[in-house]
Every structure is written in structure tokens, then in C-alpha cells.
Length: 113
Length: 113
Image (tube, rainbow over all chains, first blue to last red; front, top):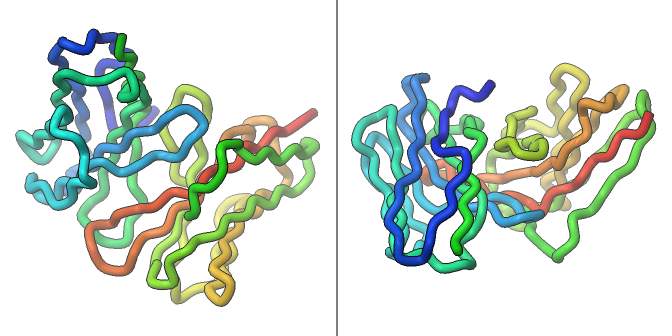
């Protein structure tokens, strides 16, 4: 079982919907990450939060809006997504921003109709 | 890692044999390297890491070798088991910064009884 919990596991939404993905960890980690993974491709970094502050945005379209309400929780708000945004969205965390492996959740499988 | 090509390379091995999975990285400034295992429907799972001041590191049944001269990383799995069947990703991190990882394209390991 992973220590990074992502909900929901699956999400189907229309292009006009607004939904949110949630990620939670209780390991006391202070850095959290969002990745996008298309089928048969490696994960691609989207956002990095360090001590609840956004530190990296990899030129992600504004229809994806991250939020870090506290050190244990990371959200990804979705609005007006496109079919090509269908993918597995992974959350990860590390104790801080040093040389540590990122701990991943099992992701949310998102399908845009 | 380098994310190249549209096809996921596959390594097929017999149960009990040793497996070697290779990875090339492109940034000579990378200072930290990680191997992940990803099973179907799951997030990437940490296997082993190595820092650039080392050239070899051993774990339980796994060994990572780093050759900085040719920017090459390999993962050796001893006595491969059916449970080792998965996609394996290498990832490297630029020195400094916020633990931003670049993932390689991945290799599928298929273990046959």
C-alpha cells in the first residue's frame, strides 16, 4: 500500500465540467509534486510545491490549477479540459527538496469526453 | 533519462536469470539518479538510488551502476522473479533546484516461468 493517497482513482468528465483531484500524505513531507503520465510514456512533471509554496510550474496550461492548502494536502483543480488531457495524474512527495526519492501515489485515471 | 521513441523496449527473461536494464541520460550536470518500478494500475515504486559521487550501489537483489563518463545507468536484478514483471524507469535530477526529476522512456521487463 502506498503512503500517498490519491482520490478519486478514476474520473470521467466533460470538457465543460469543473472537478478536483486530491492527494494526501501523512509522512510529514514538505515537498509535493503533480505529474501527468500518458499511456506507455514516462511521468512528466507539472508542478512542485515546497513548504506549501509553488516552486515549479512546467508551463502547464491554466486549465490546471494546483493548490496546497496545508503540508499534507495537494489539490489539482480542473476546468475546461481537452480530450488530450486524458491521462494518469500522479502525486508524489519528499521530505524536503534535497536528494530523496519521490514517493508516488497510485494516481487518478482521468478521461475527458 | 532520455524519453525517446514511441515504443516501450521490452526485456524478456526466464525466471531465475539475472536481468540488466539500461538507461542513458543526457545532462552531465545531473547529480542524483533513481530507478522506479511501475506495475499496471499503480504508481512508480522506488527501487534504488545513487548519487553522482558513487559508481555502484547494492540493495536487496538489485544493483545500480553509474558510468558518468558515458552518461549511462544500469539496473541489475538478480534471480529475477515473476513479481519483477513491470515497467522500469530511470530518472535523473539536475544538480540544485527542487528535486526535479527527468524520467527515461522506460523498459518493460517480462519474466517467463
